[in-house]
Length: 387
Image (cartoon, helix red, strand yellow):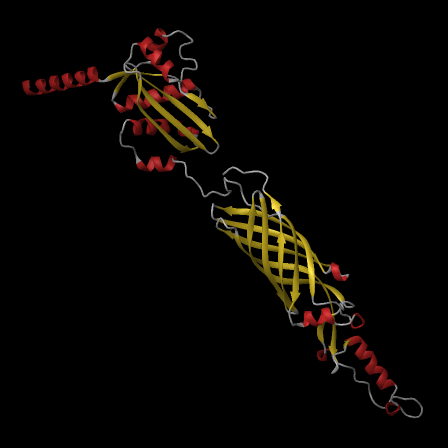
């Protein structure tokens, strides 16, 4: 019995001694911006978390109000004001800080002021995901980190602010939207023949090359300092220098690499074409299936061996089959949507705020393809923030 009594008295003495040796501190209001919690609410939450540490004797809010004047706590966030507050309260230390809601994160700063030495004894700040309902836990973690008290890593992880991949460049996103001009050449193919074919035979009757004038619109949907993924839309008109109007529009997926602005893009290109069924003669003359069928019928009808003396048909007419003909480019034919596959490669050169994109490209479909080069320009006139 005596042994148990001695043990209880010893524990009581140790507890009282610990309490007497614990430093007394006061919690001032926290500066708050961008959150719903007021400075006084944040101070109340901080007191609760400080009590849990068992490292301090935390001055009660009611005791503080009895000692202080009504205006002492108003806008008292700086070092000098907090030292004066501590002296007025007669405590050796004061804790204060700030809680700032910044977009999708909450930044908490806590500082411990030593009143006697008039210095900031400790301070700490942390960034959290914007979950204001968990503000008390956030304060507890920040205060614990400042006091070097181990924290629950799982809770820290769930409340931490995750810095996502930068989607726009904070030194000014490179946007190459702007006019484009260039030239393209058609290689040996059905399209090459169509360009050179005489207009009387449904061709264009022009040199198999043309200038191009257009405009490129682009939108970056993924980006970092050294990589950008782009959606590009290009409208273009070709052949105007030779009296032709050949429109097209392209939908491309582009990738831009490095600070030098190297770029690769690919995607479908759309335009219009006119085609007809026909064939070429041995001397290279093109005629449509309709013309050949009409000529074949007239030849049969004008052959007297196919009729008797009274004009009755002796031999049955057998027309030409469409399998003898192929679809051929013909400006006299039916208008159809034309699709191509386009690939391009290039680089953007810079001169101050002037961007000069230069690209080479290849476009092709079943009738042939063309290779070309284009150059453009645009001006970077403003910088964009990271988020």
